[in-house]
Length: 325
Image (tube, rainbow, N blue to C red; front, side, top):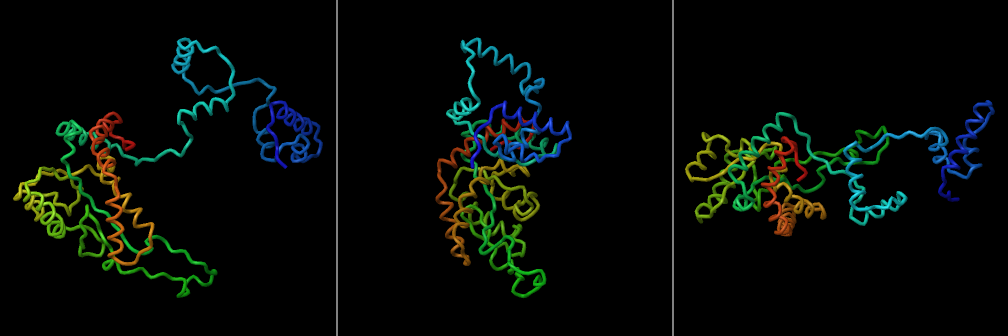
């Protein structure tokens, strides 16, 4: 049986009936009261928790004085006739403007030290590359992991005493054989168990064959890199020496600031392509990831690049907090 919408009198009668029974100490079940007035159990309890509908009315205004003044000016300027409308009408009207109730997007928390570092970095970048056109010759680099098989927790159906049964145990696979890393369209083997990029691998697999090829073709670009030790943050190592010897123009990104690096957004497409199809071979993983990469719309990439200068300005306005980009 469905319950119809109830107006304030119904709520007042329920509150009054329960108040009377309790005052006279008459044994009763509140569910019987709810049934008598034709309301559901949850609705009845909600009515009882709300303030007395026939008592004095108070409210906690959600508007500040400045907000009320703005509303007043709006009403005066538009000549609104003060008609009474229901909340449902307001919701439908607002919905026609594409406003929707939805889960709020989350952003990374930033410490005060990180905020200060982000502010300084934003000022430096805006001073060096103030216009959006300045960022179109920046080549962003990043590393991304693609793996085959299950990489999360494996759940099994067992009884309590079967915890260490051989059929209920999962053996971790060797990490050095099938861990695949991806830099933009470049596949490489880091040569270690944890997959972390090292100086020799970065020089021999990325910098020399790929970036060096761009330099030999006299392409105009500036390389953006992760501020990672494997990328030659010092000029005294083999990667730093290679960059100086070959005249590479580059800069390192700001740590813990994914909103500053548009390539972070680009990994979503190849990641989704790999996750849609179970695969257990290196070649299949590579093929799916490359298909996802090629499927990334060029228009999206252009928009991400053109937004960078605005993101730095937004960071300054937020005093270093993570932006919504």
